Length: 197
Image (cartoon, rainbow, N blue to C red; front, side, top):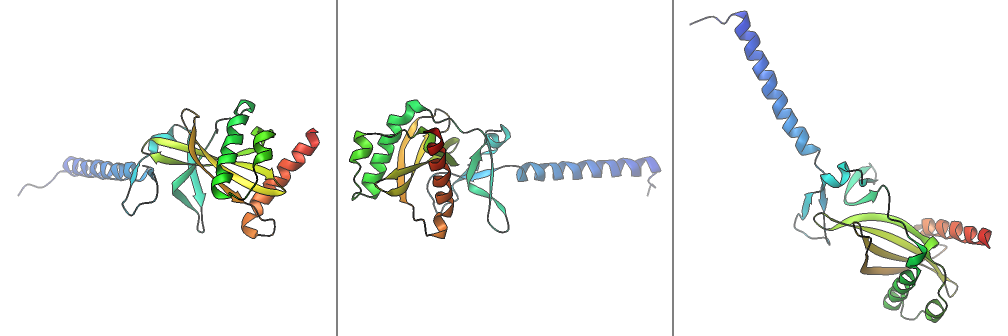
């Protein structure tokens, strides 16, 4: 049996190291993928490789919970599409439809007949995927109406900015801890409006 000389041993070690690095590299590639859910919740594992949307800088991971973890359902847009004054008519319509559906007892006559300026009362919230590679951005409109406060959530196509017929209304209660963040936002917006008058 031939003895291995020093060069052979070094060569075998180098090959082993290269193979090991290749395996580790492939594992890193797998772990660096961002797999995100899309659509409504399903017992099936309806996820897809959304890595390109994060690598491009359009989105970043949304960190949630204790201990903190990156969400696989929602994310945050780095530069949300702007809400402009020209969109006011659409915002009024969105609010009216959402209220009529979720709170039919609320009188929306003043909202429709004397529409307030709403574009400055909108805040970007979160984003998600409606379908693979079809991101949707969600916004919240903070509406004062009939001495009540409502948060109207609506969606936009993340690539075109088009409004999507998917909105809802939530009644905000000042004394509920779960609504504390909403109450703070209303306070900020109301104070800003007062300063502009």
